[in-house]
Length: 200
Image (cartoon, rainbow, N blue to C red):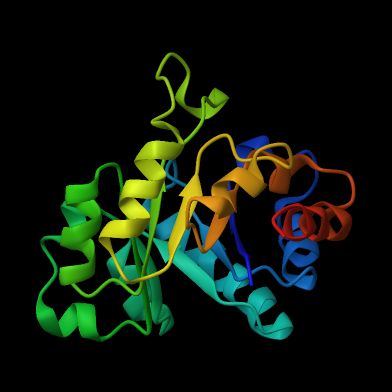
């Protein structure tokens, strides 16, 4: 099975953000990573509480991003972290998460993230993307090397679309992350279904 993680960016959203989250959760991706980097933690926590409630209704994990105190306050056991925050976590904190992911940009990052207890990682950015303008994608060879270096699921991120998702799967990725399309597509259900179908 090829899994899809939706990564949020409400600034790209062309409708009410919580309405979009409801549609995404109803399409049953593997998870929704709430990645709203511009928010202060207090604002993030308020938004996260609403998103967690929507995800719970649909049986989809809401994975919080970076804000550890928010996860503790809200009782959320799914977290995605940049490597520099992951490295600072105590063993007890790491073991408190049932889902723990990290953003990896090298084979070394991936190996370290697995050793630090991650249950999955994201690897990227694989292809050129507007989110990383001016920075060339690391490519499929990079993704393949990461997939071979760890035993946890690897989710490709960066410029993934229906035209290249089959290639992503062929080199060993367990799934892919989608952001811009998830925030902007007209029909969420069809969009996510097409991704899963293209990956076969």
